[in-house]
Image 1 (spheres, rainbow, N blue to C red):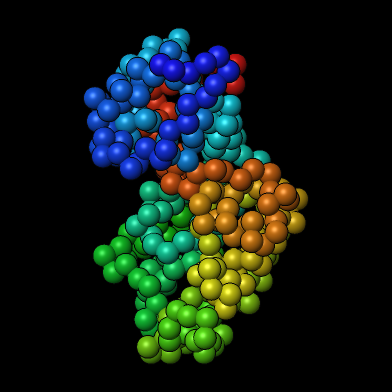
Image 2: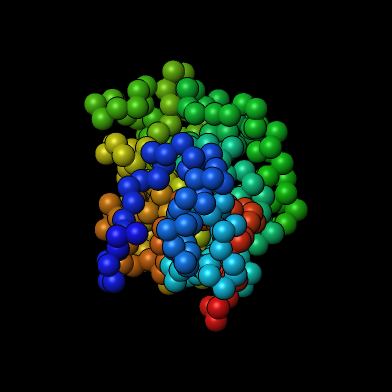
Length: 298
């Protein structure tokens, strides 16, 4: 009420308010009453049904709510990538858990020519193939799902690449003793914490002819220097590729920044979870109510 012309009201992090994460309509109305027009340019939170993202749109009409330029760009890029990729189209998927990426893998299979799987999630696939993975991270309840992904890839004619060697240690720490071992030779009580040099070479060769590369998820525990080399090497390979290179947000964007490759990538998403859900084919709660966010003319 006290704002003068040319002044801006900046609120603190709304997640401090219980009504925000509860997608509370009354709280959303309080926010909506502060403005005549609603613009959402925060792609990174569009997968969350929060009051300032989803409920607030109920208090604005199509003429008074819209997607901002960044949000438009993110949605357009993701949808065009999946609809009309230049081939060969290679997806590189990493990160710690299969459960967080399973639907993305399923949705990518009909679209990609090759699928490279690394990070902690790779061990669920390796164990599903009968390998002893020591103490490596695994989701035993998803072994059948991992096998189904492999079978579906075969049906679709998609070549799947899994790690052939790893950097193994007994503890996940910078002062841990490490070994480079093949995935068949992980010692009992040890765990794989990064892809090894042979896997880095294998992935580099798999990416050599790519015209479109989508990367979502690091190859190891990159926050610890001893287990960061696989992720950084992959970042360099993708940055040097003669291809359209698209990097999912979150940890993957962090890897690219630490590796010094950000300027060489075609597009780096500002949203980790949001970009993943777009790849999964989901409608984002923060995007759905807005007027044609994937139409650059709107």
